Length: 102
Ligand code: SF4
Ligand code: SF4
Figure 1 (cartoon, protein in one colour):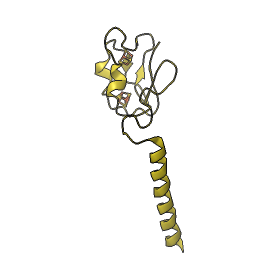
Figure 2: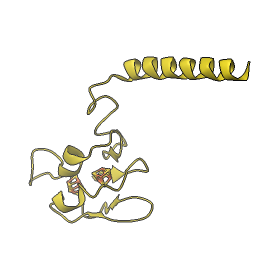
Figure 3: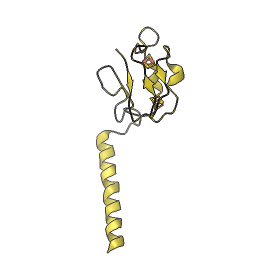
Figure 4: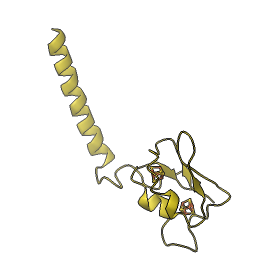
């Protein structure tokens, strides 16, 4: 029963001081959670403190490997909408590239 920080962590330091069990520590290339110390904040808080403050979607996984803050949960932008706009940006870029080399 422990959360996990993965490679999308941007080392912002926000979560480390909030952990009631000092389970989070600075490491390279990103912060990590000591699974022997993490209690998922049960008994201390209603919500896990690290994932509540983390600004990066998908940087923290629960004990089953699920993203605690899945895509769209923090930005309010659904994955489908994000993919649509990314495709539009890519198409514009490719058009400009083709025009430049023509
Ligand atoms: S879930 Fe709670 S106990 Fe576990 S690392 Fe995050 S803040 Fe610490
Ligand atoms: S709050 Fe999120 S991005 Fe910041 S150090 Fe912790 S896990 Fe990494």
